[in-house]
Length: 151
Image 1: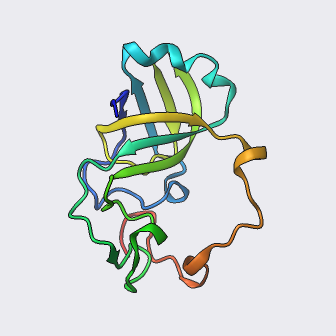
Image 2 (image 1 turned 45 degrees about the vertical axis):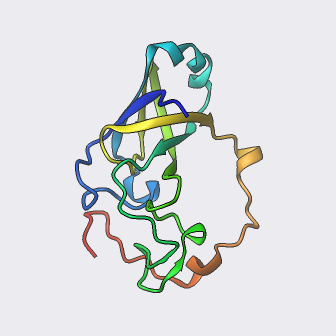
């Protein structure tokens, strides 16, 4: 895979970074798409939200069963969103504020600063929202992460 850009956020460390965009709704960021890929941004500004797919380039060792940021019970890596994954691909939905040339100004970043960008896809509610979807094991877990990053 080619890295197509870089994600800029206020988060320098894993400890500062929220665990989901829900807890980072006002966190501003910039998505800088490298010039050879910039033409692909045509019409992106017609969407209110986009998926960012990126590399967990600072994740720790892969472990297929581990506790998560939500609780201490071990879960399979594919039943969680933990960054320590075999292929280290992350995904976040962010609010698109505007496009400035090859840069997207976004809100709701839960991504470390200078994270390599792999792809951008539009969030399309009629295709992407599934109200009847199950929350799996997370349905009964009380969220312990606080917006200031402390438990």
